[in-house]
Length: 280
Ligand SMILES: O=P(O)(O)OC[C@@H](O)[C@@H](O)c1c[nH]c2ccccc12
Image 1: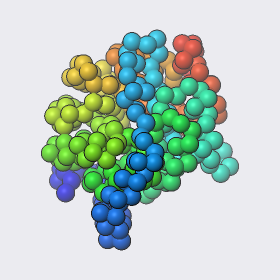
Image 2: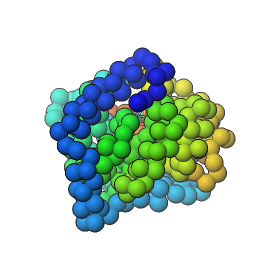
Image 3: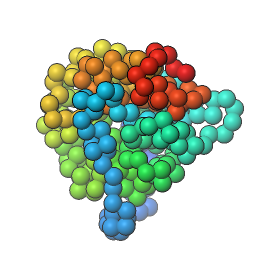
Image 4: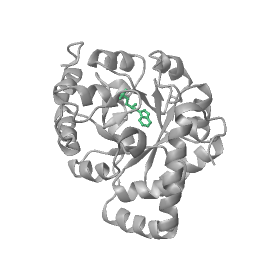
């Protein structure tokens, strides 16, 4: 189903995602999800992530997609690191207070300790919600609507180009905005061919977890002018976010720095104010 060339850690993550997916599909047919999706969309229209980020290049500071990430294979545990229990809604509220344009929620359970229910926990705060997971099938898109997502991450690296194009279309048909993540030139080609309008350049190679801080600058000339461009991963300071904005990012996606910051609203306000270089 997915790319045969996947190796290393990414292959292990996708394998566990597919195993869990097969179990859920066996319990609940896709047609049941389809009916539930129609009901949910009629009751609760989706919010637009694209509208929240559009025009970011022309504003004085980039829009921020602020991420809830309990843990990652690269960083270990991030949530409740001080010993307390983690309150995703409280964390998201600090992001809203700081002026975030949208929320991102990592939901993958085995490697990121994610919880799909976090989508519903943060949705009442009113910002567009991006689900970050390893999506390889339409079934997961329908589940994303039901769980409370407005937009979904599609990782170009983990699916062949034709499946990526099908998932972009299926997401739109399900009322979701696809956010396509790219890591190299080949991914960019696939994203553009798939008709992606929201494109995130991930500085982190998901196979090796190493960061290449030059990745956004390298790939940005290949992105269509009309695409909304997001720089993602390893953005440690407001200063770094401003540098990426100057290179042409409409928005930045920040997880670890906000999860580790004792005062995420302050971090975001510092960026908005155009001041300071370090994390508060
Ligand atoms: O925590 P960081 O370095 O600020 O990165 C955030 C985000 O880009 C990262 O969490 C991410 C990028 N692509 C993903 C795919 C799945 C899960 C998570 C991710």
